[in-house]
Image 1: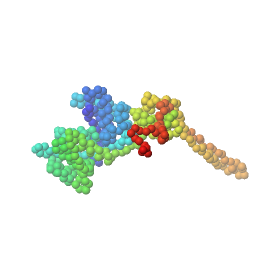
Image 2: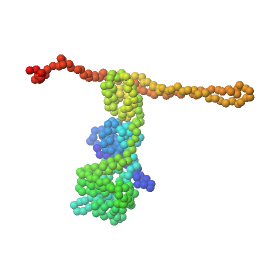
Image 3: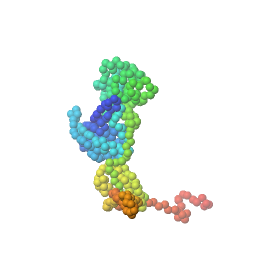
Image 4: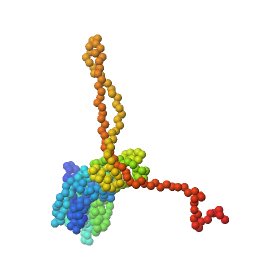
Length: 408
């Protein structure tokens, strides 16, 4: 399914860093796809996950895979539009929900404030080499721009006016001469400069991750790479996005928006425990588990949820062989506090016993707050623990074709 990404570029004062709208996208609805709306929501959420994390492999994460099947819980707005006579679905995802999901999946977040990169693209044809300006119809440039939008990578393209045309030579860009590149780029308020050389379906790129006025002046070495094939533009932008995401990623705490404590009783043995743990992890409503206590035939978990607690309990009853019991209220033990007397001084009266009078005031008692723990009985068939028996020499049977070495 094809989709178009929309993100807002808002230049911040006195700096070139760009604030990217990470959570909005527009997906083209394919008419020949069954359940096109549902597929569009999945594709849109996939794009948002990659854009927010900066990592395409995030889509392989088990927690993310579960969340994709419940994408409606992460949507905050949905409407329909049209682009080039094609019906589209406009989607806005919830920033807190997506960030919580990434935390649950132990994935980083690439902050919305991102480096703005000036791109000088030089294309070689059979006859000559030319620079692709901002309004160029170059297919290579269009692919670069589209992929950068999908990944949330802010790009600036030279406008191609008189100053640009006279400020740098194609040979300087193609030859990788740093000082001319830096000088020609200083008119643009960007954080980095990238020179791309295109030959057919091969792209060779050099990234100067520094302000233009320092290029060719400092000893900072540029990065370089290459990509080849019909998707070379996608490969290149993925490499650059991965670089910036890795260097600027923020790892959030893996706390979910909702978590419950749940206790299972009547577990037969350790095998039952491991079986229960694996079955819980497979539930689509579960992000992760923390084992709190194991005591006798019972175990208590803290379950981080991708859904509401009621939906989790419904799924639990459907998918696992358990019986719901009345929840328990667990009150933490509090050590008894020593009551210290408070002596209130009175006005002294000469030769009066009242001069030594004192009153004792007790501190108010601390009432502990109870915590609700869901309680379930495990009804699974008792797991069989294999028992190894020792075979005595008398019980051992001879194997055909093998004779006792002591037999003559």
